[in-house]
Length: 215
Ligand code: SIN
Ligand code: FE2
Image 1 (cartoon, rainbow, N blue to C red):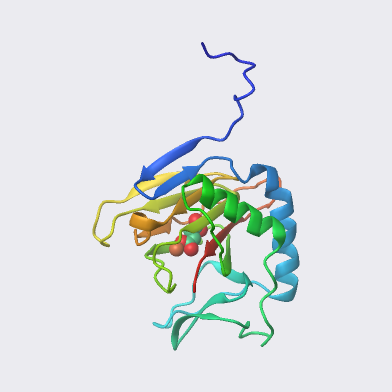
Image 2: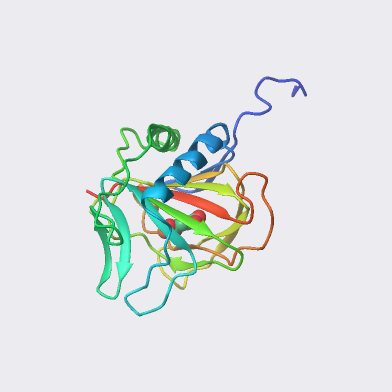
């Protein structure tokens, strides 16, 4: 019988999305403060910026990176770059708290020995969105994407392997982690325009970390 005072009552919930993909509800919650102070430090060295797509469209999400390489876009295309094109400096190193959470999340989802090269940091203000896309600029086509949500809630779009496949709308809250890899690695996903709000830690923003194994 379930007991109200069960020690497992606050254990994070695992919500399978499909083969190779799972939502780990509240899994990052204990690390949220430390992750956000890491983001703050990274943004001092490599400021958030609005990248331009190869098509000439300025993205509504502001981005920066940490790790051995960072994801960037400009009129020439998308790529992973070992240095920040805005400063010509190497991207800030991935803080240990980032690496630990990424490894633990991947392992929880069944992906052992995860060793991400890159962490893209997305900052959403009210109205910012990310259209349906696949993450396919990485050489490793099996290792998972580990996506950590912090701050304001968002509606995550989870589609299929084809752009036209039906899309599920999933609410992601502060501390939720989504992991997708293996058979789910190339699923189309995106984020609906962020609703304005106020979060006690991040204010008027949502911050998302996505870890990637590039090489
Ligand atoms: C991404 O697809 O790179 C980010 C997803 C998110 O912000 O939840
Ligand atoms: Fe993505």
